[in-house]
Image 1 (spheres, one colour):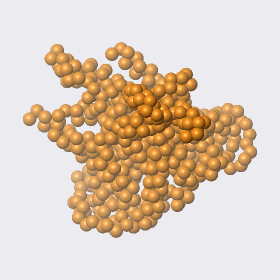
Image 2: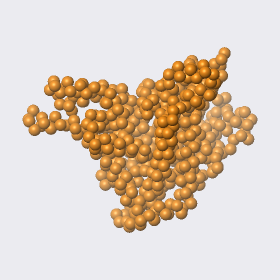
Image 3: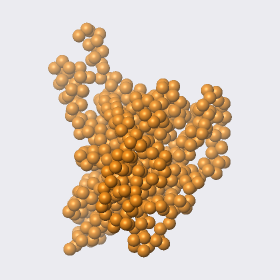
Image 4: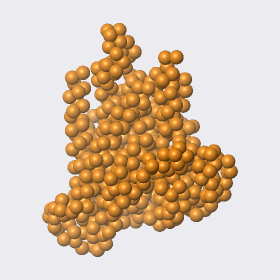
Length: 295
Length: 270
């Protein structure tokens, strides 16, 4: 090979991070920085011109009832879902960690919904819950329990809880798998020793197992916080933000604002959403760092 | 028997997980006039025509081809660039590499939706709206942080001597990495391929912004639009949903253990 080429080739390994960093810079860092800049303007996204409006968009957000409602929906969904996922995932994992025949199959079934698009899964739940010919009202009718059924998705008060439950159903397997991996990392002698010292099952779980599962809890809490606070697909499928805008999350609100030509404003809401995600995630990380240090 | 209550609980869990899938199958495969209650909960008449009609009306063939292309492209790109970057972060410990690595890790906290609106202008300026290529690069970028993280950690466990001995034999370090080390990364590569392939296949929040023309739509978009158009035709909705999820379910059953391994990767020591 020609000399200069050969020397280039010898150094090529040092530049192997360049393609990844270029992609990351172009599709992530640049839009992030531009986003912060656009959030201070009244840009419509349609015309090339715009005006600098300072913090106007942010002030508008806090004065708009619909926007504040979206913030509330995001916080309710985004804080309750990870907690439920963690508790249910742990209970599932504790059960399926026992030597039971067929537990492999059950684990497979429980995790299956998590690999399917939340949008499609949301539509599947519409088949169960809709008031026209949903499977659930039909089943309740067969059992002469018609009075138990309400059109939950059509009720502003209940719809968000249905979404929370559907999301829990879909992703509990994810939490379970992570807890199962964590449980496998705990030597049997540790829990056995606690049992021999006279601790009951739940006492052992609370005092011995859970403290040793902090790394698994951390992954579950952080991943689910980020995913739940950014929730989009499952709401789009089940209620599309309705009835009215009762279940409109910040992500749906952002999308609509941007499709309606309020690009500057939508970007400002996205910046706020970043803060809404960052605060609980940092708090959770700090709390668990402490818990890890104590154990 | 002592374990009986546990078996009862396990059966209940399995039932809860599977019933929605059965309802989907029932609705998709039954004639619209047959209801669950009428047929005693059993699938008695299989109406294959539902699937064909949903396939045609939702332009599913086109959508599958688009989704497949985006999936293959984004996963391929992210594996190659992330493995390379992982090598640099694992082997070249300069201050800026450490800084860039922490920056990538931090970015995992930022969901894609936050960037979507400013990205729209950027995509427009590079002709990236309704472009499968731009979508591949965009999704690949989303996969980079986690992939780099896993590759870096894994490469650190490989002995440097592997690459160094290849250099003595006349290879460059670049060649040594791709020929000697990269094949040894197969377990992590296969895990990342599976996890990210599913993410790419399921992506909705980005595709709904950037792939709006009908001949560029992906599977979730096709199903979403189909449901919005056909409204409450639950048979058609179910048939489309069944078709859309089938590839993911098949892949899941074939490659199950990779899913579990990938998810568990960070669970033991975080």
